Length: 340
Image 1 (tube, rainbow, N blue to C red):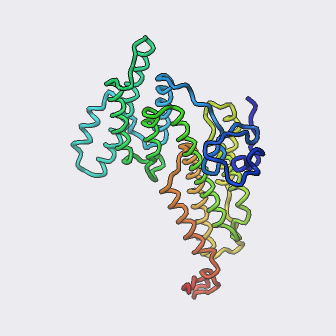
Image 2 (image 1 turned 180 degrees about the horizontal axis):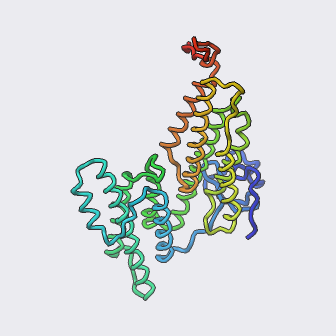
C-alpha cells in the first residue's frame, strides 16, 4: 500500500458527496475522504477498517491484542500470570493499608485478565479440534466473570505516566468478549473521535494560552502540526503499512515542539524568567499528554482538565493585561496589581 500524505486537515474535510448537505453526516456514515475510506463519528472522519469475521478465533486474537495494549499503558508490576490468581486474590484480601491495597487490587486485575485470556485461548483450541463451544458454556461464563471483575478493579490502576487511571482500556477486552466484533469496532470509532476531539482541545488551548506572548510568538503552526499528526496516528492500526509514514510524522512533530524555547529579552527580569519556566512546563506536560492519549487511543479527562487549568493560571498570571500592568516594587521588578 502506498503511503498517504500527511498534509492537509483530512479529518475535517467533508467529501464532495456530502459537502452540500444541510446537516452533518450521520454517525456511522462511510465515505471516501482524501483518497481513504473513512467513517464519520462525532464530527471526525476516521480511517475505516473492515471488522474481522465473527468467530471465536477472531475474538481470541482481538482480546489478546487488547490485553497486550492494556498492559503497555498501565503502571509496572501488575501483569500477573493467570495461574497466580489465587495468590493475587489472597494478597488483596488480607492487605489493610489503603495505598498498598490499591496496588494489590491492580495486580489482581492483571491476574484476572490473564486468566480470562488463557481460558479463551483453550476454548478456541477446542473449537479448532472440532469441539462445539456454545455461548452459554460454563467456561465462557467463567471467562466473562473474570473480565467483569477485572473491569471493576480497573479503577484502581494508574496510567504508566502516573497521572490517572484509564478505565476505558480496562473495559475494552470485556466489550470484545461480550459484544459482536462489528459492534466493538463501532465503539472504538466513537472513542477515537473523542480522542481526536481532546487532541484538538489540548493543542488549541495551548495555542490560545500563548497568543500574544512575546516569548513564544510562533507556536501555533507547530501545535497544528502536532494535532494533525496525532490524530492520524490514533486512527491507524499498527498493522497498516501507512504506519511507516504516520508514526515518523508524529515523532518529529512532538520532538519539534519539545525543542521550542521561550525567547527571553536581553536583560530578563525575574518575572520574565518565571514566565519562561512555566511556559516550558506547559509545553512539556502538554506534549507528553498528547503522546499518552495518542498511544492509548482513549481520552484522559483528568489530565486534560489539569493541563487546561495550568494554561488558565499561566495566562491570568503572565499575559492578562489587567494583571500584568507595569507596577514596580522597590526592587525594580514588575509587581502584579490587585485585579479590579
